[in-house]
Amino acid sequence: FVRDTLLEDIRGLLQISHADRFAEIFRLQLFRFLAPFFGAVIIASPLPDELGVALLGLSEMSTKKFAVFSFVLNAAGIFIIGGIARTIV
Image 1 (spheres, rainbow, N blue to C red):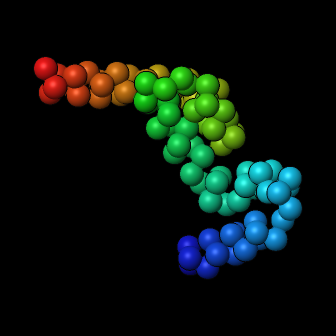
Image 2: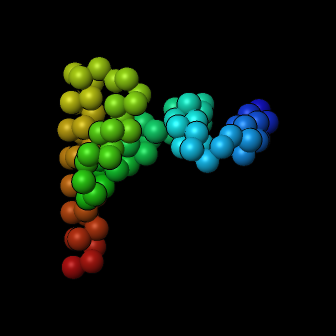
């Protein structure tokens, strides 16, 4: 199932010109599925949150859910970094 749709997406991208290829990536089913996941990883990491916020914004999440989700991810990221620092020291 995934292999067939992934191959169709890749074939479709290869037939599109270079200018339209970037815009077409945002319409892929795989991108719509993975964008919130990558956004959550970026928000939980020490990287700047703006890219993660943009990726989560593509998932059309409500503002209230986004605020709670962002808070939880930032807190989890802080605890993970603290745990890593503790194991190193």
